[in-house]
Image (tube, rainbow, N blue to C red; front, side, top):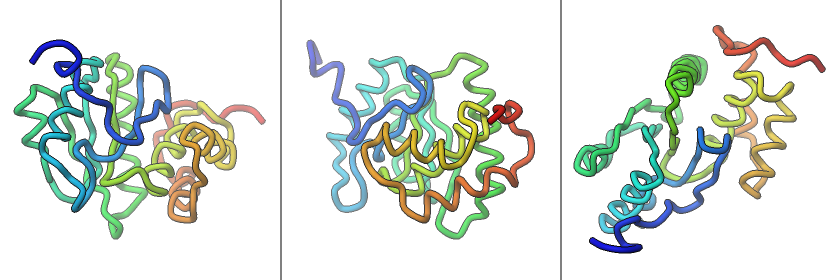
Length: 174
């Protein structure tokens, strides 16, 4: 491959949550019946060309993780299904994100699609890390970045954050 095709294409609904640190998108290649192997390869090539050091899949299943190996992209799988305990999953995920960022990593986080739950996960991280002062502020920031309103499933995840242990930074003064 040469030229622009060697760089691939950005994943659908790609957006930076924290510039050059944390981004979100739909699953590379698309979700469910819309998933295409060629598109997945092009999107992973783009992630590699943009120097992402890690892709984190929150899919409940290990679908397509082999594709990251095939293209030399480091990945982590932290399953977060509809019936998983959000406190346990978010504590694990946020602690890992803290470690990865301290090591200078550039991370893409995805679920099947960019939905309320993924929005809630990243808004919760902004609150947990102390980058924003309150749940409503974290929700508003993510809604503004992604250009869509967060529904109840996402807001419920943000509401869980005060129950988490090991917050990265003390909450900001309000």
